[in-house]
Image 1: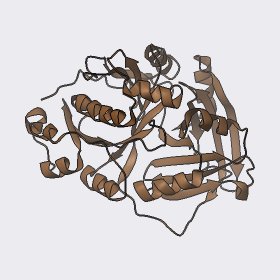
Image 2: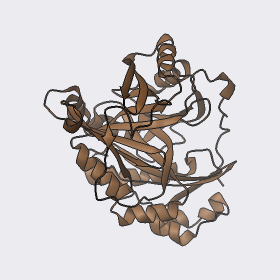
Image 3: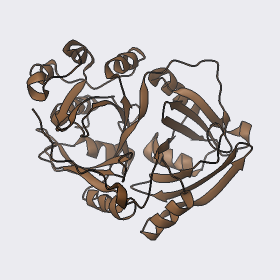
Image 4: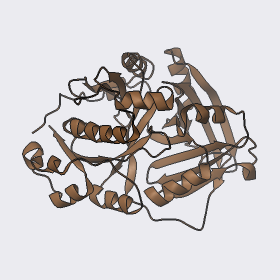
Length: 375
């Protein structure tokens, strides 16, 4: 049975920057409407709001989809020569903004700037007939930013300037509930810099760390540290490459994304077997581990409630820590470049991140790298 190192519990009393949860994740993409359509049909997201020429915007359009507590925003430029287009030219489709729901966006901005953050957006009050929001923003690794969102006085579909989006085609949901964590890849020798940023600028604590002995195969390795805010609702693992015989998945990401950025978004479900089967039937492709992974699974993780045949059929991984177990599976990259992917996770007590699955997972990633000719 695999046991992880002790995981630090968040220091709620010392939390100078209260965060209620993830408000939304915004991705800059080449075609916002097609991306929103894909996430509706493949992942079961529901149409929520849109903004563009019809709402008075002249430089971009955005479509917002939602599933339970997860909101994704897809934004595309309407002209050449824009910052959004430059972001897409450099990075391909990917995450630009991780928006955090706070009670006071102006205070969050002032406090983090005072602690050393670089400004992305000064506090901005936005208003329409549905109420008022305040947003502000700071820069983090690469071209990624954090937006602080204050929305207690707003009752509209999404944000001022957006209108409800009500297409006739609305696929059913797949059981995705909330964002469990989001992983950032940073460059060589940069992990500690960004760990320090989250500790000193945002008041996060380090839950657990993994070195290249924990996360390695015969060919490649990486290191990771998991940062969490005071109440534990926001968790950001940070990866950096480590020396190996061949190019690691983090190096491949950095090459194709042209710098640091969000590697994957982990979304939680309460019924992973049903969710993954539904996603698979809708065309979502997952990384697969060898069938031998399941031969000694019970000996490694102990009793689990799920049927082994279903886990084996779908390729779902299992790991246990001192507080319970988790089930997880990872999609193949969902963008043209081998960069962003999604993790589907169900926690049954476990607070860890699947250390016991690292070797099998990374070998599966390496098999995909071989097919791409990038290992």
